[in-house]
Structures are given as C-alpha cells and as structure tokens.
Length: 190
Image (cartoon, rainbow, N blue to C red):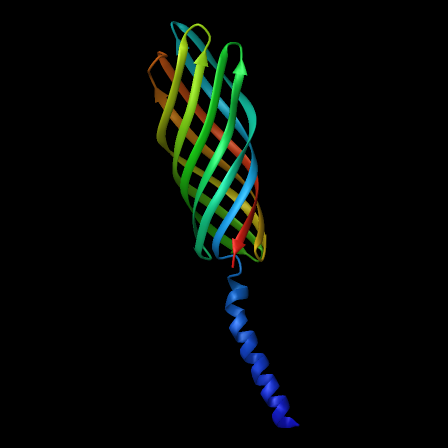
C-alpha cells in the first residue's frame, strides 16, 4: 500500500510541477481583443483667414492583436475608429493603426502598464466652401492603463495620447491632438 501511495504522490508532485510554470504565466502568449473608445479631439484650424478651434468627444471602437512573451513585456498592434466631428460645416473622420510596446507590472491578477509606440493616422477633413483634405502620417503615441486577467480572459482600461501634429495643404494650418479612453476585453491563446 505504501508503494502505491508513494507512486501516486510522486505522480501528483510531477503533475503540479509540470503545470506550475503555466499557471504562473497563464496570461502570456498571443492575444486578441476588442473595445469601445471615447476620443477627445483638440482642434485648431485656419482656412482662408477664418480660424476654428475647440474640442469635441466622439465614440468609436478598437481591435487588438498582441504577443506577450514575458510577464513584463508585450508588443501589440491596434486598429481604431476614433469617430470624428460633424458640425458647423466642419467634418472630421479619423482612424488609426498603431504599433506599440507595453511595459507591465503584474500584481496578482492585476496588470499596470505603460505603452509607447507609433500610430498611423488616416484623417479626412472637410470644410464647407473651402475644401477637403486627407492626411495620413506616422506620429508617436503613448499611454497607460490597468488590466485584470483571469487565465485567458482579460479586461483593461487605458488612456492613449496621439498628436497628429501641424500640417498645411488646402488649409493654412491644421493642428489636432487626441486623447482616447478605452475599455477592452482580451483573450490570450495559451
């Protein structure tokens, strides 16, 4: 009887040891996700001597694909429809594709993270009676967030900032900055 108990105990210990590294890094690997966003646009536009400035909020969505090779590091790509503005003859629509690195601090099931990367803006701007412009360019992006993970499933909230910079074309001057707050759900393939 003692030999059977010892064999079962040894097999049990080996099983626990085999699964312990997976449990410690259960949220590492490839992941996908989706979320809802709210973007605040800070706009400063000058066209034919008229200046329009202000800020507005709009809702959108984001799609996430990433890889977390280490507990403290992830690399991801996001596609986001940031929404836009349509009022007083000014119409703006923005989408963004970003690639970034996330530095994470894991505290139990909670992840705190900072992110830095580059974003490719695709912004279409139209002003009644003046003209329209499509702008596409790479700009730096950065942000921070907090997430909670339960094995493969995760929920996170984050804030990202992107500056589209200043450019001139049809308009004399156009500057815009955006801050995006998002709530996302992710799934990690273990």
